[in-house]
Image 1: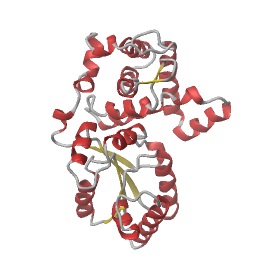
Image 2: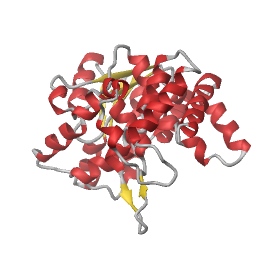
Image 3: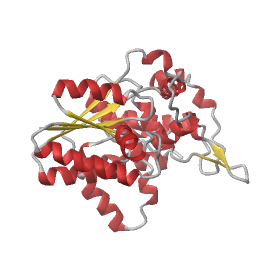
Length: 303
């Protein structure tokens, strides 16, 4: 049996891909929107999400108990909820768990939503990107797949389509981007390039090197100011990780690891006690934890 969880922001194409996968695997297709429509009378009603996902879980268990594979169609961007769900399912069923990530450019998602009868709006889509966590192996996945739309290239902003090359040759607009924050004396491009140069001295792992180069790319899209005029970049790590999916992808493991390093690079700044470090070391595993701490140290030194 296979449990396939769709992961993606609104407008990314999850539902259409889920239908295809359901036919390919002869699987039960469970949709959070369909269940909202069924039990609440409105697919857009977000008032009783706990009730909706209780039904999703119950029906998932029923299908697996009957030996049927399941396609689990929802946004599923929260890594903690994904991990808990997999732990519950794997404790009771011999199931192969597969994450299917819909890597669709943000503007493409916005345009698709604008043409639908039921729209969530641009602000909601950006809020979802800010909360998006790329799945990684420690969550319990047996496989992770990334799906790109065929016409993605015309939607990808030049900034993050060619960022690797422009940051390496010094022509990126980010070298002129003032971070307007006392903790960052360098331009955004200079900081990212310095972090990358430091990383080159510490590892030959390309996914980690590129994570160092791209780790703050999301700052370009998340800048906000407090009353004193100081810039802040809330959730930029998640936006950076999402954008990194479009920055070259010769190997899916390389792409997945790069995004995972990026989305977690800020976390150690908020770990105040040794027990917190140990908690995440157990969660991530020794290798990912050690790699993450190398990225974190380069990021701090590059300020």
